[in-house]
Amino acid sequence: MQTETTPSANLKIWNRLQHLPLGKWMFSRAVCLKAPYFRTIHPAIEELRPGYCRVTAPNRRGVHNHLGTFHAIASCNMAELAGGMMTDATIPSTHRWIPVGMTVEYKAQARTAVTAIAHLHSIPEFGSEPIDLTVPVDVSDESGNIFVTARITMRITPRR
Image (cartoon, rainbow, N blue to C red; front, side, top):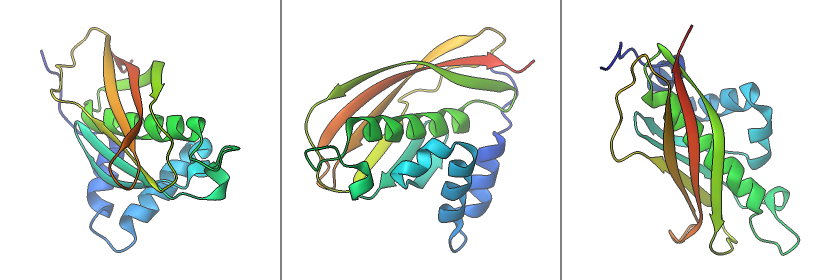
């Protein structure tokens, strides 16, 4: 049975800031202050709602590998950011989450800015029992070609 459906603090803040000038930029920067390793990819959270998150990042030298393409681990960072923010926006404020596993497929190279999309096709019930939620994330280049797919397992538990 679904528990309280009060949105997470992050989703409340997003909903207030997203329509303001520089609101998405401020929100993205605040996320990077809370989790500094995301700063390395210079992400911009473009869309956030229960069951969906879209994050973009520029193609710049700091995310390149030795071949001059978007680095595999930078792509994993994109996937984890999109998946984590989507999970946070989806679960009720009475619950918490933590990633416990991730599988990644590298399908191609990217030489452009990238977009990571985490999207649930259906939102499960969050009750008193812990659940493992598999979050699919696709990372694509500017042409929409998916070059990385990730499946992140998020453990969802009620807050103590």
